[in-house]
Image (cartoon, rainbow, N blue to C red; front, top):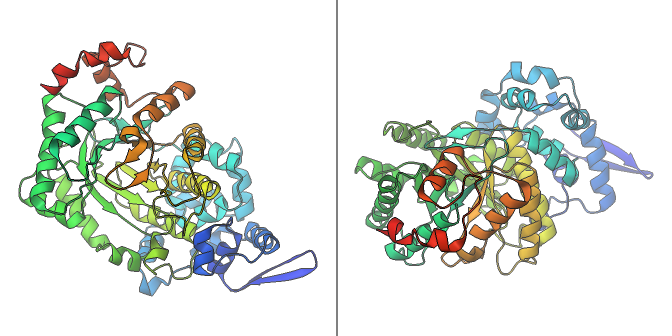
Length: 459
């Protein structure tokens, strides 16, 4: 179905829904690379105006990736909750934007609505929003999950402690873990990106995580971010697996590039659940995504990268994950060229994920060849903190020496919590106070007092 809009005496024609969505997207390098971006600001505005007039219900009748050829599309449509959608079924995309910004869209109402929204609906309305709109609405979307502690409560910010090491040296990993814990980080997960695919090495890392968590009764969870098939094999071998990790994307073809199917993810979820390692909850999956992943695999089907990213959240939602995060600037400037594009993309991703009912965090990051710097990351971090982001990364010095990119540090999380008055996961907060890292107000104790605990914690 074609869409048209006349602007300034020029009639713009958009051949189908995916073309309309692509042309309405704020400018970014990945869509230019894919050949789907608007050719001018005028064309982009015409597309936005046409999109604003489109009924939300249209997304249930026209798909951007063919139903017959794509299991992600089938998942999205086959699990759509018509009853949950009913309260907004009469709205256009523009009307939906206005409703989301109104007081009627309260946190409980948004939570009830989430199963009735498709990823394409979320992506569409985000394209009509300013930065402040993305912040305001996302802040109202609350998604709470649990394993050994509770993630996503209002007024809380969790941190993934990321103790990567370029050779998977256990002593180096342990030192970074201790550093992060001393700064009050790690309530989201202690998550290691392994340099090796060796089952022996990954098993050693899992046992290190488990030993630290169990010996010191840390109310958190560990994860080695290896391929899901490796994790399944390690579960079968008796390794102490808390969470199953996998990178996911928004099309069946892109997921095939990751070596996964929805059936494989279901198998892994059931395997992790069978271990019964969570003391508070049964959210056992951890997913990572990123704008541009489908394009980099030539599996985007002519769909803009932000809409494809939202579809990845449709995949995540089906598996009730403990954590999902967009690694927003990691893929490089071919997809998000500079700080401005990275900031906008991070806010879009967070908005779409939370609106769909996914516990969305963000790896606020950039590669060294992008036109971005730490000031851009500070801006995005502060905006996401105001928007109620579920979790961010804690990397020693913000410089990941294994993955070779720039992220956020333990210090950054401390600043964000101080500025915005955010708390850690409550169970983790109590543990920090019990072991003498924080005081009764949740603030870090002076460094000499915390450092006196090093011998105890390292023992």
